[in-house]
Image (cartoon, rainbow, N blue to C red; front, side, top):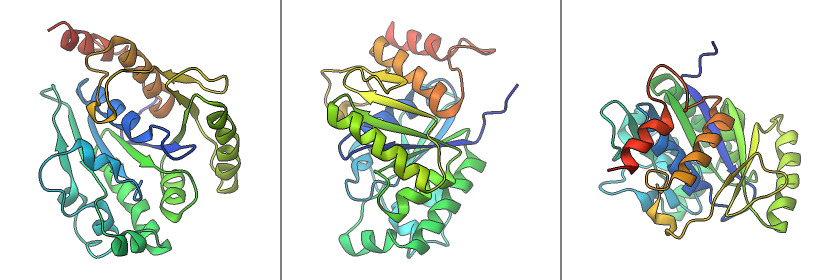
Length: 248
């Protein structure tokens, strides 16, 4: 049996606004509610969307841990996302930075620190998810090269389909072969998994804990992104635990 603990995955947007942050939260929440310990690192410095899903103090953020606070432990920047599990955990390290620090966090030196942060998280958590912007900057290159697996996230549009092809080319340039493609808000012929449309707002994620169709799709993403099968195993399985949550 293949050991899938400590596996890291970069969820990389094929375009800006692809829905990568929402998918990262959905996947992390579903895995954590299945009793797994999951870390989410926010490499999408420009949008800083992960912070919208978190409450409380967000300092130090990930950009600080890559620059001025690079000697601090990763744990200093982790913010707990509430999960409905006694065993699971979803810990997020968001990016919340002024432009000056954001610029420094995009440097080649900071990118190398990001690689080490991903490795450190993989040693402490069952799974590591990196919310990654399109491969066009040092931190996104660091994310896709340091992570064990890479999944491309794209909107289900003609523009999204074309962006997948461009992203495959960019990933090939840095020696990375994507493990799958996820289309958001509709079917796409090049996608391995489709995340269905939902009437809930983006900041309402995770919706997978109350919408079975989303839960099923996110479980499929887990298989593609992490090589885990959350619906099988010794316990009740991922969808089983989600079903218990939904039926309340």
